[in-house]
Length: 255
Ligand code: PEP
Image (cartoon, rainbow, N blue to C red):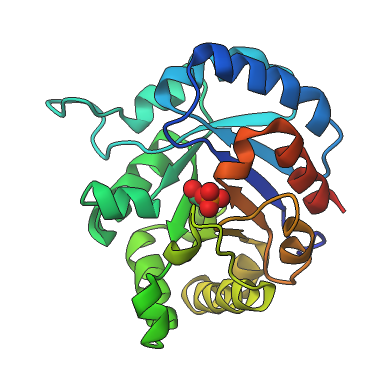
């Protein structure tokens, strides 16, 4: 992290977990534990918990995000939620391109780009996920894959709009598997992404953009991961479901 240049952001991704009662209990436990954070704190929750999360976090330092949004503003897209709908209810962030969306729901780099566009147009901050599969890492094409995903996702995004984008480097083989990338691996790819951003948008944009690591980050390994120069916080799945663990990670990024 280099806090002089950019913001560290710790964001929880609850995935499809927690009913309303459980969400309320988790957020109430979390609020006092993260209130003194010296980094941005975000929780991305299932759609059904957004209202609860927004009400409970009002006046706190916790921002609320959704886990996806559609690219159209409205229309015949049964089961989908638009970026405008999220914005209207007070949501600030949205995760786009998570590997579980790519893997299980047919998300492509092109639809990720469309969703990014819609989210920016609606005034949301985007947490854009990119990352390679295990076989791609083994083939030595991590840089190519991550660069392609990032480039396509950002097509049509201006320098000014980039200020509303956080990139989360999430190696797919490390998500929910308990296998964390080493801090060197995490830093190396976050650096590759930063160099790409410099090529596309210039040095100031590259210095200023928040690039998180995500993939089995937890209370034990967070310190080392967020201490890396190019790792500006984390996107946290499993460990964000326990307030005390999430708070340890927030504290690690607050140092
Ligand atoms: C994620 O879902 O973005 C994630 C990083 O999950 P986990 O921390 O559980 O690996």
